[in-house]
Image (tube, rainbow, N blue to C red; front, top):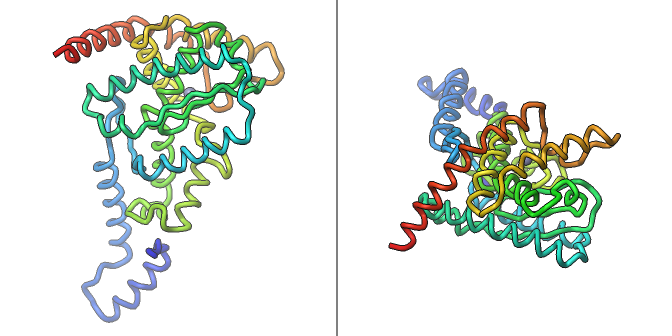
Length: 304
Ligand SMILES: [Zn+2]
């Protein structure tokens, strides 16, 4: 079993080796080397989020995170009650299927075939008054019955679904975990290949996600929220839904937050601000143009 060396271990190792070999790297050099390695890691694992063009870092591969994500999702479903409302369940699942098909089509048309093959899309509605919905890495979605009044209609469901699916598509959970890894020197050892083999991995996982928390219930940053809003809107339009309802969902969400003493659970994992509704509304023409262009090009390519 590989061990992640602590800095102090390095220090003592180097001290003893210095006595024997005068040319061995000194600790101050090691610091430099670690910094360079972090820069190197950053460069090799830096990629661009399709559509928004934002640069992101991801040190976590699908093979590393997806089994944990799928297991957590399964456990969640076992511990929670599925909705007995067949019509609503079907509606949520149909919206999910349509949007995930649009995402899948987009990935396959943009050189992301192996990535697309790793998703295991699944959509469930659980009986719970909490205003919430989330999507875990790999496409595992849960809607709570409590969010349906905010969704209000099928296009509203699509607005929320698009947003959640976009978090998984853009790998926001993995990015957050990567940031946690880079924030500490110990994470370097994990990043260098001891993933899944060292207790340190578990520690970083817990720090990044909160002990016992479900991956889908991460608190995302504003950057991730804005990106999920934009990507989600593009995907819902590709799937044939009305983007205006994504804006209306957030209007209803803010009204609910203002009218009740307990703000929707959704807002605790999806930080919001005043400008969000405007940004999303202003993005409608861009999203429509993007989705229209993609659907036309994809249709031509698929005919050939
Ligand atoms: Zn979000």
